[in-house]
Length: 510
Ligand code: CS2
Image (cartoon, rainbow, N blue to C red):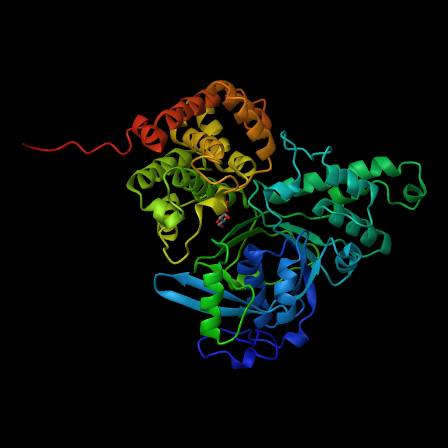
């Protein structure tokens, strides 16, 4: 196979491959996306592709990687084109997406990223940078002690963090009299837009503090925090599409179908959902024409997704790993895990807004189907990454909500215990770096001291900031510690048995 997907070769693709239905040369950039990984390419970039095909040609995407050059290296020789492989038991549908017009690697050229962000035509900046890149301290505020924050405050013209880029770009736009862009967070954080807005304001306040009395402040750069608070819109959004990491086998299969090579096709499922708070003072694509729900309040949808989909995902990941299941569909086919997930949903559902018209029955039925998609091979180890950043909004929030109402969080708390057990199992039952977490060094240090179980759970809660200062914190710690003892003594089997899961059904008759 010598030929590669690109403008020059796209016409040679076999019939049945969906191609961009617009002239890419006529498309102008209107969106900068930070974090141009597989999820962005399966989700927002696909929605934008539909807008472009509908004639809204001024919303092309400039993709920015904040860390690694890998996506740019794969896509630049392909003129930004890539294949989306939409997979389920019925087979695989291939769609070539053309909405990413150019790719930048921030560490290689921060000035180019800032130049893109200050272009007046850029009216929206979307982000999928993963939970940990928001650099929140254990209490949820901006982690001022993080070296990258210190770096960005000292070097505003060559930042490393999303906060540094956005704030500097907004300062430059303000100075140039260019209206601000709208910042659209697409990560799985609770109230993601409001959370990012708050972090940006905190970061800008630190910047302001450094410029007081200097030439910059005389030029009006001070009070950037107030400008961001008053003039920059950060709507929230709920994004949903399952995107397993692409494997070499996926690459080979897609190349065999296309007849040419794509260095980085993206695997995904047919399901796709986007719910966006409709607050775009600088304009937006007509997303509502392409299945996006533009709403006033995203919160109910966000909570339902984080607590039912992502919460179950984390449960399946850690319990799956501890039970020897490498993929979500295999874990979900395990009767004990399946029963556990049903009970987890039953625990989480009463914590969701009751007056928002959410149909949790239909939602969980659809989730069960999605988790059973054997064509995805979504690895449990992939979801297991960064649990300390994910569990607060997926599991701990619902557990605390139940405790506040005097209800038990027996199944929710088991997911936290399974996370701790899976972290501790690395290096013995699981490979050392089977999955990673920003807290790995601290966790390994803790485990090596062999603390008593309740001490270990308390220390983990402290490190991860779980239930910080919450009145029900101690109760939750006790639930988690009880489960963790079971994991230690008899693995998931005993932990399930203590909840009455996995017991042989009583025999009827003789
Ligand atoms: C998963 C999510 O990796 C994970 O933690 O739970 O990436 C999940 O697949 C997406 O949020 C689905 O929209």
